[in-house]
Image (cartoon, rainbow, N blue to C red; front, side):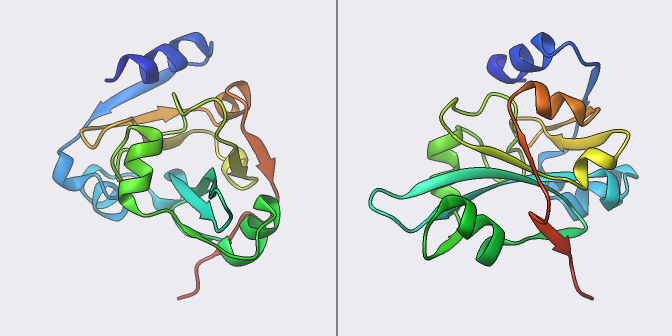
Length: 160
């Protein structure tokens, strides 16, 4: 585990469990199926980009069975006319992490961190562990301790 991720988790005062995984199964749906976790208990950390000069970014945490509301909630919070999911190369450059392993722990201090309110209703959530070969199981309260802002309506239920 990257030292900065482990340092943040260790200093949070919240119990956590590191779960080693097959990197080929790091994408959430594959991970949940292979390791027996429910999508409702899994959360994704997604980097978004607002079209501005220079571009603005935020990291958003949403449950895996929901859909991030990029076009309304995120766009308005970023105060831009257009927002989108950040390209994978931007995610890696800004966070130091690859898609499938992005975690809220150890992100740059100047990167806003928003969490959908539904995440906070879970007893424990599984999140990326900083790389594709691990996940982290924690109580969602740790997100508040690292500076996340709870946002109602950051995500909506994905339509079938």
